[in-house]
Amino acid sequence: MEEQGFSVRDRRIRHDDDAAQPAQPAPRDAAPSAQEPDRPEGGGFSMAAQHPAIDFSAFAFSLAQWALIFMGLEPSPEGEILEPNLEAARQNIDILAMLEEKTRGNLTSEEGEFIAKLLYTLRMSFVEVSKAGPAG
Image 1: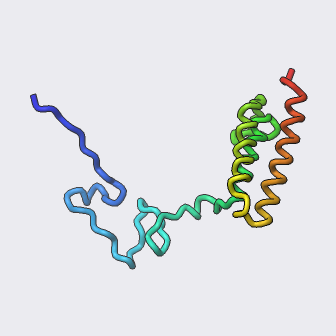
Image 2: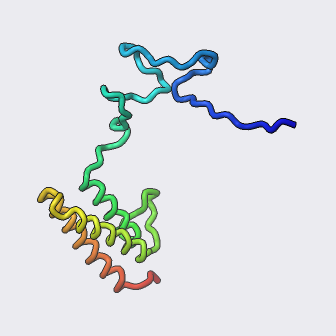
Image 3: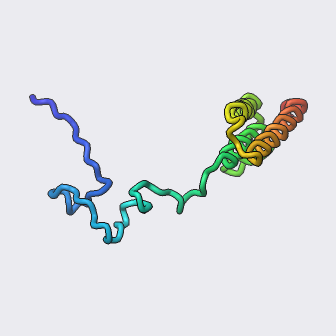
């Protein structure tokens, strides 16, 4: 008996009715199909319509927000307050501290101040939550 392999079909461009023909690039002036993502003028992929731009401050804030979630001070994305997980909170704070150290001299003054204030606030919150002990 002959062993059957598997085949991989790239369906990103072709449609079912085009299966017999090789995929052809759409003419430049043609409207994009509903199945193809919007592409900016250089051919790259753009998700700008779906997500806000990410910059250093947004990334740092995201890490800080997760530290607060792990401390039980902010609701999770699902809207629930989690039991404090101080180890996970400490890890996010340590990641931010490492990021501050590794980017020193490469940040704008606003970015540097922002990450310093985030770290200060997170560290003070961490101390307070640590002192409070387990919720009873």
